[in-house]
Length: 195
Ligand code: GTP
Ligand code: MG
Image 1 (spheres, rainbow, N blue to C red):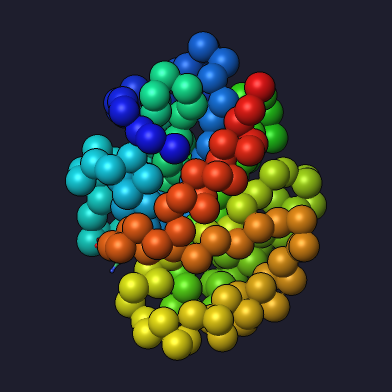
Image 2: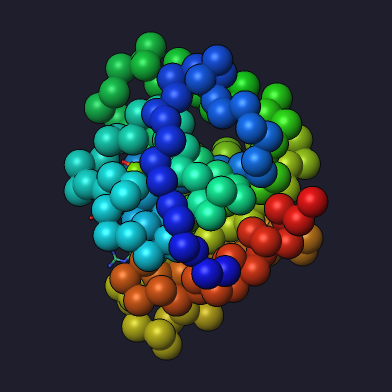
């Protein structure tokens, strides 16, 4: 997809702040620091519209980005960040769960994982939860540029096995550094947002 317009809309801390224009929404979940915000920036050719940081846990609300006045990318707070309080973690959990189960415009969830490592326990819990509720999901294995190309296939295979990835759930190899996987991922997003 050719992105000609992308704008930050709101950092929503609750359902009353979600947009009301009914455009399709694509949400990105994954553990802290896995590369969710970087992936958004790469998808829309912007250096820093979605805030990235080397300090995990920076994204703490649902951040809405409107793309081409056609759809929203929704950046989630990262899970599995140990240094936030239990109360705060539970509040995020409740907000995300409410969003995922009740949000009508949600068309696809991107579960972002790190290609270099097997999925974390939190990744597996998240994937099982998504599968249980049968939400449309695409797993994106990012940071591919950080390991040699010769290891990609082995890592993908391991990731699929550890998650017990369903055959109807696609997995995309990605790099926010090189743009690997970008066109493929736009293709999958477009397929889920057609009216
Ligand atoms: P939270 O908002 O804390 O949940 O993190 P996040 O998932 O949004 O991660 P973010 O995009 O901020 O990236 C974390 C770090 O990983 C940053 O230093 C990025 O530059 C780096 N990074 C993310 N994706 C890639 C990638 O594909 N390749 C490389 N080499 N670095 C990446
Ligand atoms: Mg982020």
